[in-house]
Image 1 (cartoon, one colour):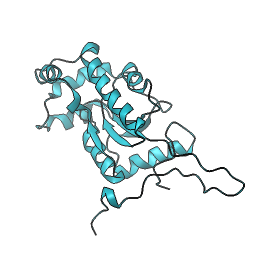
Image 2 (cartoon, rainbow, N blue to C red):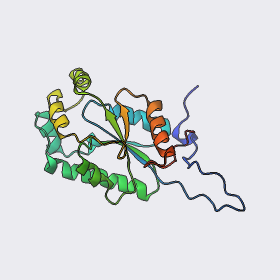
Image 3 (tube, one colour):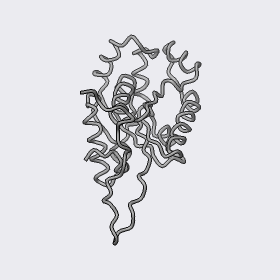
Length: 205
């Protein structure tokens, strides 16, 4: 059988019980933006696109929002600094804000290496929910060595690890870089069931 298309899927709703005569109506579900983060080679784009396809949500690759000068620097093997990343993060912040304001969900892939970068993306936004794809240098280096379809050379991985400020479980859903789509969604649902950051809107239970 063919998988359901976006138009076939039911709208995402919260896991609230139906209202009764003695119970006020459940609040509208909070719009959700999932942001898959991690260093280069962690699978942000591949897994993010797969998660978005599974949920029937739009997907945005943060790499597409870099200005040309950033792309040129990375292609030349020059690491980006905070000043380079600031306008890029501002564009992603506005994308997230637009979807939340319209009450629509989305999946975004973005390295978001430093806590300050994540705070910039969060400022004024009720979300997003960060999903950190965690892996060690050796595995990621091996992945990048075999990649030929990306402008960022494998040699910049070391600089990304130097910049990386890993989020803890209080700031993000943390999963291994080899996690499947189902495992990522289950981890988000588990966190939301513990009353943590992610609202119960995935409808997976």
